[in-house]
Length: 335
Image (cartoon, rainbow, N blue to C red; front, side):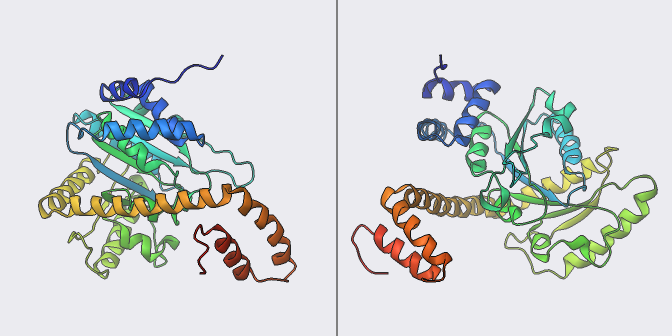
């Protein structure tokens, strides 16, 4: 016998009171592909948005090459923040295998101490095949965790790649984690990723690597100075830290605090969130239209007929697409 879902009101009251079980269930609804779950999730979010979070929130995206120590840094920073009276939500986007479609979902294992903290909430989500490897419903999940009273939301990305663009479009601050010994090649990190970063932190600055980390910090500092001024007016900072030893974490949070103060006072924080909301409105429309298109029985039938012709070279992909779109237009106007 299938267990009945909590009502919208039960979800709303439970999430606002900090019920972690109901919060987890609501996120599961958000991530579900079942239409009835999606409808219930949207009703819950709409109700939660009627009331602003109890205190201002900050959304921080954290990225870095594999092995940079993202999970270790998040645990160290998260424990520091809960010790300062903050409630921290960690949304960890796990890589999904293109072959098996399975994901690792091991962040709770990698963040044992933080996952046991009553003021922290860790939610690993499979990235699936969505935009840049970022879980398609991460933005809604952010809204749910903020409504539950988590004032700091940390979003860990899969790694350095297109996923960073999506994470950047849903966070207030973007932190790029680096390794000592960067060299002139900047560890293969694209300039665009560096340009997005508000803070750069060279991790593993301890023991024999301390000198190397400080050298890397100066290298990145020189590189950052050559970049154009960010729209926020904030000049990116480069720090060194050791997530494993816990050194430099307080200084990292101080820098985050300086960023927050500057963009709040200038009005950029609110302006950026409004722009992000508009961006995700269009992304949601694009996603919804794509779903409507491919679920249309007539389109699926026509696509099945046209695809072999495209593969055989008897019709171009562009001409086939135009035919399908023409068929989909309700007013039958030409493209």
